[in-house]
Length: 393
Image (cartoon, rainbow, N blue to C red; front, side):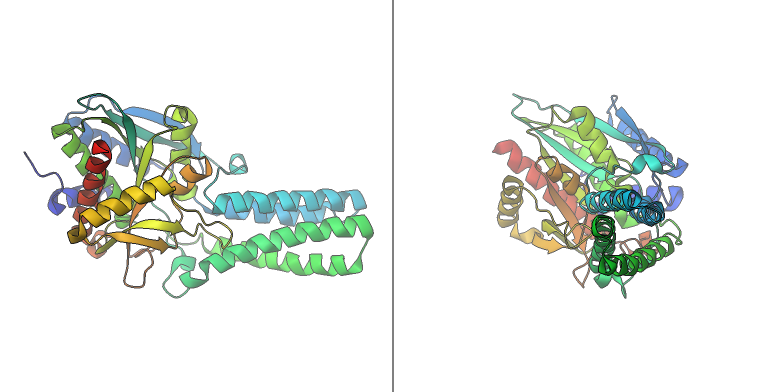
């Protein structure tokens, strides 16, 4: 039986996605070509039925930040001439703060319809068990890549959560000040509103500057994950699990709010209510971990895997000390966030660098040359061990 987990085989997928296809913005033709390649590989393995779940998406995360900030600026203009306008403007700003907070915790984006949108999709393959069906496991890997973002640079990334939280506070504070000013005419509230408005302007300028970089190759984020799931697909074709149905979900538009994962749950949420989910994120590094606490993208957006999934990963880690994969808290926001918000199980396997952060995260350095092939193999073998453990539970 062919060993589908060898790093050379996995790296061939990464090179195809990150070098030949290149940067894969959500909803752009390159992301579609990535899906076509995944379909091709799955067909070569022997999977004839690949389902497509189409959906509309913005092509950058910047809209999730920029729209609430721009609405707050507009709300101040709306309320500049009357008390009622100030009250309405305050309500709009507070709604913008709520929307931004939802985005930072990987929830659905209520303002997505205000952004230009393109066609993306999630691909699904189901691998039935050989015996009695007792549980369902969903493997997640996203196909798109992000932009090079100055805020994620080695020099600035330590301020990332603080900057996003400050933007949230500026919007919420501006909205509250507008309402107080509208109700009481308070000069103090007016002064605070004007000060917070400058903070909103500064946040919007930072968000716009963060959009100036090019889209990155996404070798680790997240061609590495796609490669792992394709390797597991090949292994499952040779050796299906006995009691566990496995869904392979190649999600689109993760980088703009995990929209591919939300699309999966929108269609199959009832059927997957009791399923187990294992997400792969940036596993092209020497060190791999299962994430015990995710920060999200602000100081108010943290989330954790469910207790059952965390215990599952911990048990496999204890059973396979030679793999040297352990749990750790990480600055990260990904598809487990979309799962946990909606009440599903979920745990993430992720790589990290010497400084404990995601390595080359949203940087042009996220290329094949900076990938560690052994990390892909380690993550894939650990995931297979987790799958076998779950199947035998």
